[in-house]
Length: 187
Picture (spheres, helix red, strand yellow):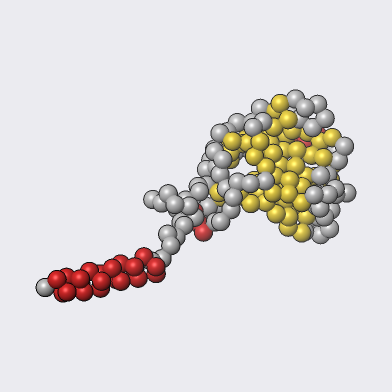
């Protein structure tokens, strides 16, 4: 009887050890398959173009900000900051939202009245956006232009440059609506 119990214990321990060794790891459940982070993104350098437009759009899984430049954009950065400051003066620019992204394009600005609204001037109406709360002008000084992007909370984002149209390019900033797929917390 004792041998039989020991044999069963040995079999059970082998089965348990095999289960532990081959058990699949817990799978993450990113929202909409996004594997973005909230860490700073950038491409160092300077560009010779000018910012010509700032616009935004809503998508199923993220909100998108686009900065249009009339030449190829080779210098930019996007990062979360505690406060956005105006280029040149260093004055704090009020940006609505639970978190703030500083979007910098290392280009000047096309001399049009619509951009010279003063620090804190609203560039995009964010009513109806799931993530965006504010898009404000923070200024342009010595070939560096800054936009303050207010978002609901510190959420994952990606930033990249797309060529075109023509000789121009676009800095694209996508901010996810959520970190995790609904019902999951292991993202």
